[in-house]
Structure formats: C-alpha cells, structure tokens
Image (cartoon, rainbow, N blue to C red):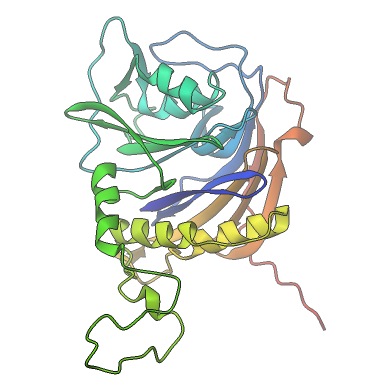
Length: 324
C-alpha cells in the first residue's frame, strides 16, 4: 500500500511512500541521457532525457517505483491489485510492458501534455520482467508543476483522469477515491461552529475539532482522504528546507508502523521509504523506516551525458545527532 503526493511552493515537489512487507532492494538511481533503454516490443531509445528516482536494478535495468526527469516531469506507480488489467499485443500500438511504462514516458516527455499524447497510443502489456519478478498490478500518477493525471489500465480500457488534488493511493479506482472526498467536505482546519442545535450551548473543548471525522485507519481510501486534507491545508515557507520539511510532514500523516498492519506469517506492512523530489532542481530526498534523517541525491552532480547508471544504496540505519 502506498501514497503519492505533490506540493508546490516556489519549486514543485513530488514523492511517495512505498509501503510493503519486504523490499526487493531499493536504490536511488540516476539514468543518464545516453544509457540504452531497451524495450521488449518497442524500439530501443539510445538518447533521452535523464531521470532520477527510486528503483530496483535487475540485469542493469532500472525498475523504477518513482522517478523525475530533467525537465521536471514526475511519475510513480502504486499498487492497484484486483483492478489493473493488461492487454495482449495490439498491432499499430506502442506495446509497452508495465515495468517499462515509467522510463517510456520520462525518457521522451517534458510535461504532462506530452505524456498524455504518448499514452493515447500505448498498450500496456502483461509481460513479466523475469520469472522472479512477476507482473505488478499498478496504476500511475504523472505530474508537472502545472498539471497532474492518473492513468489506469482496467478491463474497460486505458483510462486517464485529471487529478486536481495531486494525490494518489491504491484502491479503489481513482474516480472512486475522488468521489469519497465528498463525504468529508464539512471538515476544516479551523475550529467548528455549533450547527448541531441553536438550543444547545455546544462549544469546542480542544483545538483541531474541525477535522473530527478525518479517517485515521491504514486503508488506502482513508490514506487518500487524509493525505488530501493535509496537503490541501498545508502552509509552509517557500525555501527549500521549509518546503522539503513540509512535504515529509504531509506524507508522514500516512506513515505505516511495524505491527499495525499484519499481513500474516509474522510479516507486517511498513513504510519502507518516503521520497520527495524537487522536480525543478532534480534533487531526490528520502527517508527510510529506520533512518529518519533526510538524505539527498542531486542528479546534476552526476555526468548526465554518461551511458552508465549511477546508483546509491539506501541509508537504512538511524542517524542521531547528539547535542551533548
């Protein structure tokens, strides 16, 4: 279970939580402009936009969970189990495996409108990377500083939704996630007024009572509502440190703690990592479950004209700054 978010101050920020009970091995990965991107059924791309994000590297191929390219276009895939549906090969279409979708878009598109145009001819295929990495059931959020869309491949076909809230969780389908916000339109960051009855002298006895009813459970629908409320009411300065800090606070509102989501066999879903990328500057920030110190990787400090991946293992051990 995961949650993705966007946030804009002076710069534009994009990131996500990755919540699961185990990790395939995650690395912050920079794919430079001349790294050969190969596709199972489409023509290889030899020269393209550089990108940075979190990936599992298999056979020297970056399987991105989320990434941002040098033009500021961002994309993430989130679990969509039970609803995702991929197709057989179709002539006249760009037949792209689901694990190729992020590099296919980010290598070629500078903004959401270009991505939307490329998606019009795409056919997402049910192709596994190998026998150890099965086909992931996903849907995707794609953002630039001006617009966000959600892409879902379902039995009815490929659906592209405008995403005005800039948030995505897992299930249900995105239109149902958005519809659920109607149930919470009475919530507010301000103290509530007594509308229960003018005959009763009701008054707030605590700060924060305007948000009573905001869901606090770990289900994907509830995480969508909670993140949307926090994001849409967030206030921060426009500096880099303030913006990054606020972004992590937004996603920390749906952090998953070990023990609270039991998936059986003494395994628990946790927030393996949380990411935040300044899409304008190409700086990828992250924290991990056992390391709350924010770590940064700047794609522009690498040779973006290279033909080899740049890889950074996650720092997973807690780093505590001692004052005495």
